[in-house]
Image 1: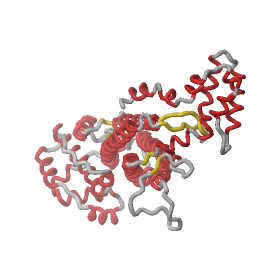
Image 2 (image 1 turned 90 degrees about the vertical axis):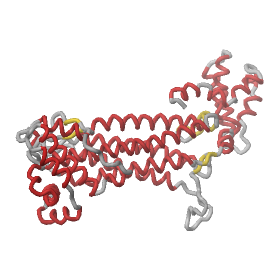
Image 3 (image 1 turned 135 degrees about the vertical axis):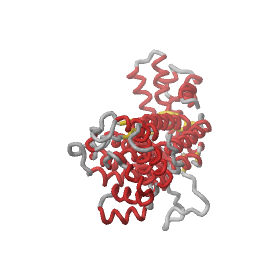
Length: 431
């Protein structure tokens, strides 16, 4: 097994130096496979491994003349290796190295991302535990609906992050694929056995049926999956932004000492980190479209995908990495205001308990339409009025009090009723 380079954090995986390291890794793996099968001397491989190196500046210097990045790289490597260099790249085409090395970068990036996603998972899990019974109002259409807990909301986030984790694990397997099959992928000048050995040394599987390149549906899947994770992060960020609105203020991004929210208005405390995450998710979706455009290449290959991938892979990987790290820190230090949640839930005298009152009347034998009309009438009398008090109207409505006792009415206004199955959800998520 070839020694893997130490996996740094995301940005370093997409440097020119790291890319050239993976190219050399692939070339050496192919040489080792060729030697194992007796096609080149093992002593030559040992010499190649001992001497092979590159200088990124020298590679660019050569490329400026030859206009071919792989030829420039090989020329520079051979300046270090000398005569044994004639065994490097035997029977290969550029895409054998480019696509196989790209797979190494993509897999390494997923390893880093999965580690950071675990940090996010733990941050959400902790907050969900802390706020398991922190009652707040649930909203639909942006309008007060029925009580939930903030922990219940976070449980939904956790479930979504875990689904994204599973997608990344599946994706890691799908992109851990190399191809050492030569021009147009027919193995005309190199054997499938070389590919199998080289890929095994690199921790990859041979592509099932490559052309001159690995088909770009795999790569489109990669960028789309990152974009989907970005969309989930955007959902959480938008929720934080909405809950931080001045008229809501149920949660708030941590505002550090010395931080300023506005050049004009000293009072401002803006959800800038959540807004930043929302914008970044848009970039990831745009990159996903570009990756889909790369799938349709001419015949066995062209290089229209190459210029696109030089942009979208480093950008998408480093961007989603930043987004996960940023959201993790945001969640860890999120300010939560239970008093404001309580205040908002009880506005207009608890109109959000209307369904409980209606169902209680139906259980006593009243027709649903009649029960709905009575409760809606009380709710709308209370709605949007400074003195509106749904609870008071219900307790004074003879049509209700003839059916329900005081204790039965009060039970309808108990928010704990809405949390009675929360344990089942938490058990599913091992919270």
